[in-house]
Amino acid sequence: MAEIESILSRLARAFNAAKLKHVIVGGIAVIHYGHVRTTQDIDLIIEDDSSKISQFIGLLRTYDFDVMDDQINMALQERTHASIFDNRSYLRLDITVAHEKHEIDVLEHGIKKNILGCELFIAPLEYVLIGKILFIGRIDDIPDSELLEYQDIFDFLTLYHSNKEDIDMIILERRVKELGLESTLNRLKSIQL
Image (cartoon, rainbow, N blue to C red; front, side, top):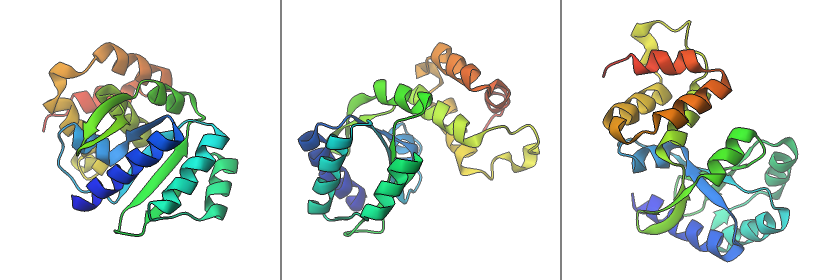
């Protein structure tokens, strides 16, 4: 956990200095909302502002991250994620610049929270669940006996069942419907842990 705290501390300083809008998603968000699990990366969505991104990348270098310019440039051009490795640990950052509607949506709804002692923006619980469903995709052809073998399905179910009273189901259902993944949500909601 010390490695994650170190990375989050350095990230908070870099984001604040660059004034770059960001949101944490993925495994760290899952952990934040109560599902204990391991992770090897910190998934981030950042705003599409080339001057702020350039400043942020420069700051990451000064905070002991291994930034490969070719990979960053390619990821920006191809609108994919870029991996940046931490020189102090085995962890990495997986950074996505918000281009898609769902990425922009989660970025705009990020909430500032204290995460392991660092003030950072994190995806609201509903958006973490939406992200899991988006990543899971359609599961109509997966037998029930195999569903819990998938980490993202297990993450969804753990968060969903342990936070049911806090989930804004209107937001969750509306966004999932927009993605055309209602059948996945309905199937997941029917599974008991």
